Length: 239
Image (cartoon, rainbow, N blue to C red; front, side, top):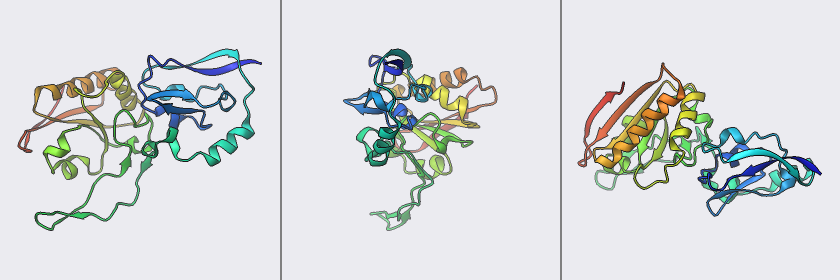
């Protein structure tokens, strides 16, 4: 029969997995770094996943395809483990009970983690993840937590985070995804936490552009710069 069904442009897909968590029927999975249609009978053709894609890789087309099978979908969803296309790390978690904090090998002091969400990578976080709702967002450079132990309590505590590296990541779609996150979650403030090295400045540029594209005139944007010695160099509001 001819019906509506999802089509994936693999050239645009960045493998972020947002569409996977956005499809209640479990019709999509990440295979070899790209979104794939698991089975045509799992796709209802309504396109709920399209709004989750930050790169515009998904669209609804009309073509010959087997009829949507709701019974098959129910069986598939019930037995589908691990979640999100075979990667447990893509399962969205928020407000989980914290693990017992580890003791510092140097002083014996217990240092609790302030992280209460998963995933954390910008590539992996869904645009409308529950941990973004009405919370400040920290866009954190990959190196920052390694350079400064203060990042945990100074910036992560009580906030949502998205981790990215402007130099080593495949950043296509980052600005669009950040703009969508900022536009749709009631985030009052976004803080860029980056290293003082020049390449890290690209993270600030991406966030500023995302803030502009979000259309949020009320959004506060700040930048915190961490030195190579782990000290906070400056924190300032960006116009």
